Length: 429
Image (tube, rainbow, N blue to C red; front, side):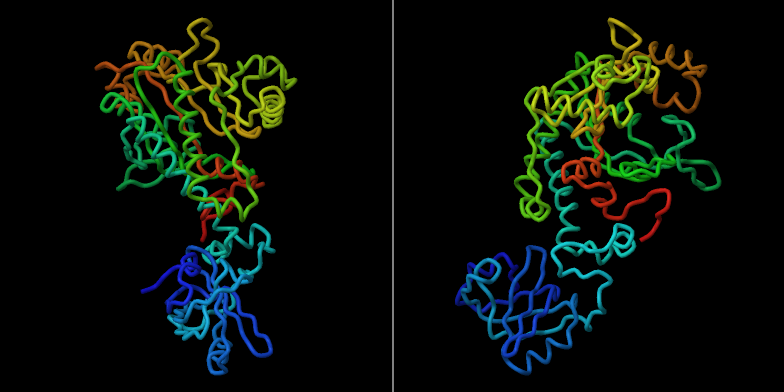
């Protein structure tokens, strides 16, 4: 029976079988070493028999092999043990030389080369670490939402109307008619609050925005939540705080080796996230008081302020102007110029947008008419059915998974922690 690399130290004196990829071969005068890689890490196999050394010489790096031998203690080996007297069986034909030297501790190639060769480059322990962290974060998000009695849903990614941001959608031919890739599950998750009260979704979203920056993708994984019977957007922020704390905890529990490979220390999210109103945030950033949004440099300045004044790498900016928020956003009751919404900044970059939504049909009708649109328009009518038949005060948020991991790991470009990124220039592999 096959065991994994991390199990070898507990099997000293036993005959074991391991299998994986030839990570590295080293030939010395009288002995050769095979470093084997599997999903749990690296193991060392000592090869002394001349015929086995000759066999190993023919197996290039990345050849998939099975090895049976005896485990011996060796403080210099990974985990303090190695396999001796091995019998090696190739499970594939000898592998071609990889385009990237996967055995080196760090990737020497530039990002375009890594992305062009992603099917192989992702095997490198440092490259794959990004998705190990992402997978752990997904587990933490789901675990937290389950603990808060949210129901997981899956909503359509092919939709009949483009309503969230005008022309920035991917159009497609749907059996001879127009359709679009969904920019978010927003309308559906609001609708499902009327069914389950508390819902969440993990799935792809698509943005045909012509951004060519280190923080934007045309397709990314969105972690959405929506729930009812709230008093305001601060209730949404409280649940978001729990979700992020759960994601960080799961990363610490399940992806510690990945964090160590990347030299990442987990941050803490405070029990009470610092909150600053948008108008005050502009002052902190030294921005024009009439600016309707925060520029990246403003976000960095506010992040520095939060770290300096509150010791927190997280800060929420609330009360964005209504003119910069979607029509379904609830205005601030005391001053309708501002919204009951927020952005959560992490290390000086916007990570999450959330807030309270409108929940009365009459408010939706008024908001759409103010935009010169009608609630009877097919783009909105099916969505507004739920509000005609009673919806509670509700709100929600959406976390971009890749951006979360990029900020956590300090990646300079979000593509570094995306499995197969899609952007203005990349549609393969």
